[in-house]
Length: 57
Image (cartoon, rainbow, N blue to C red; front, side):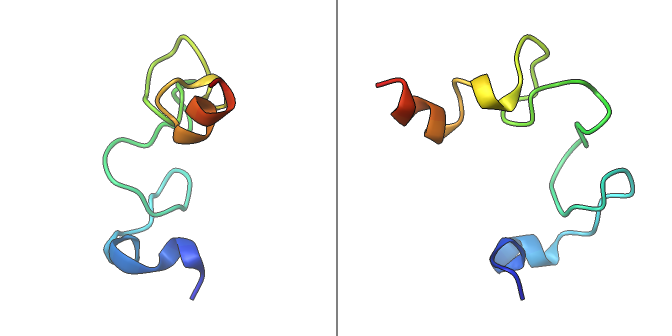
């Protein structure tokens, strides 16, 4: 089993739009940030993603 499928993610159904296992609304066709869901930036620039917080410190 892949690391991303371990734990609670393994219990989630596969999304019919993107094929991945996730909770809530699928953002794949919404042109939104995959980190926080807003449309003013993409995940690489998301202030809510921990990786970006470390890089900008």
